[in-house]
Image 1 (spheres, chains in turn yellow, orange):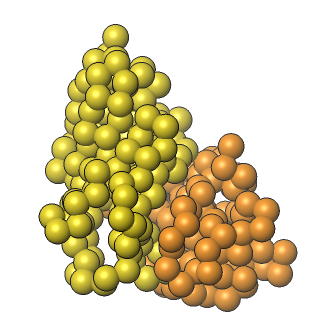
Image 2 (cartoon, rainbow over the protein chains, first blue to last red):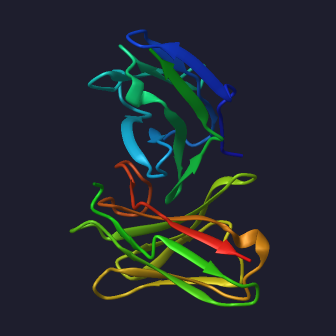
Length: 112
Length: 116
């Protein structure tokens, strides 16, 4: 069965440091997509980054990069140079058929 | 701003009642998705429409129904409401074909439903 697992309920980091948020997935489908979303306390869901299963290179978007290790079925999000505004809930998601399934999320707290 | 518009932002109603949530997708997006977010269940996929046709169903209760209209806006109808239906309901849209998301879903700001 397809599944997304985020094992870190909460992460704490200081401003300007890098942080890695873990995500593992399980699927038998050779074609899939992996996504990361950010949900600040205001509630909206903000798309951050996408990785396709056939993409050879890790995706990057500004300070966000996705560390895609296909054999390990992991898709960790790396945020470089953390900012106070990065404090939020982060969700990993995987395309399953026509929709996305989401992990339980990781709360990231950035302190000054 | 994602370009996806959801109304209303907040809704408070009583058990047994019926409500309608409305969503306007981003300009040009043909796919609309509905998700429910609650503390105990997390983000749950409910249903997807593509260009007016139902494309996929997730964990949607029989008391819930949705449709997508010719102008591509969508409505989610929730009836015989129970306390456990209290949640944040998101609409999302994408420009994908609707068969397998390889382009991001863009979410609206959600409708916060409180059932008392």
